Length: 376
Image (cartoon, rainbow, N blue to C red; front, side):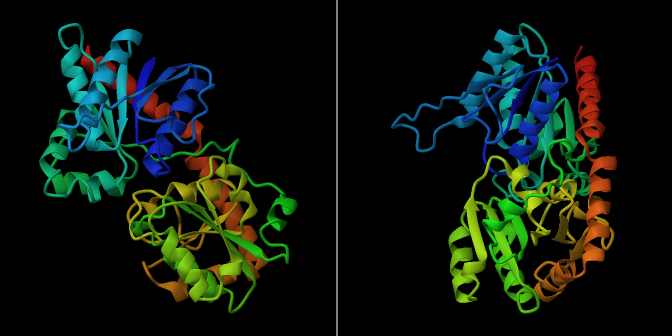
């Protein structure tokens, strides 16, 4: 198939999933065309059977806000026409599904171009419920030829909040289990913790919903009982406040802020546990990547996370904001080798048995075929 993919090319879950999906599809023989305003952060432009088409947005003085949606729709239609795309797959409803609908209508005199919308979370729970975007979000979902969500929890929320009766197929996020795995990287770990402290890791876009300041508080609490060093991977509005809090709690020397990283599969295996204290997660991709690397996640019991983590088996789930409970879980993982070994193995098994690429990508391929057949 010739597949067009549009996503936000930034350090966020929806863009990462879309990029990984495109690379997996290309590896399976499909031709993938990324259509967006910048090269996705994890995409190697030299990957075989992958093309990148930049969306250029003109910033005329008349425009207070550059009309990206219109430029995107024009580029989608152009790429679809030039490269005979079989369908468009857009990630994150606003504005991508509306742009896809416009592109579909532009090409209507020639042929039918179907499009699939994948819902990732905040496009429904945050942006979509905003009064300014609610009607257009609902309309875009209803007009999509296929709709998928990354968790059953998100599917249920979408149906409930928007009153949508149409089918929404749940296709969970996935991980490349050949790329994400454990390794004995003592030298690499020593550069962050020369005194031999065990490492914790957090990965996100440092938005308030990720509660990155809680990671600092968990570290400070856990260090009262056992040595630990925290790797903070990513960047965003809460990085500055997190750095300030680390100094205030006197743990700045035990936190390393690494900024945005393209190869997190090299960093995650260095850690003993992953911190994911989010206020909301529709799935929890970072936790899945950690589990594939035999790193135990300590997360919050929100959204679709319980669909991934079984509390006490392959990770721990606690209430949002419960710093003492999460710190106690971290302490137990850092001090009880048998517990850590058992849970790390269980996490790897969960990732391999339920969420590896080979399990999930065929579900997308099947969904594409159904959408294309319905479109005639």
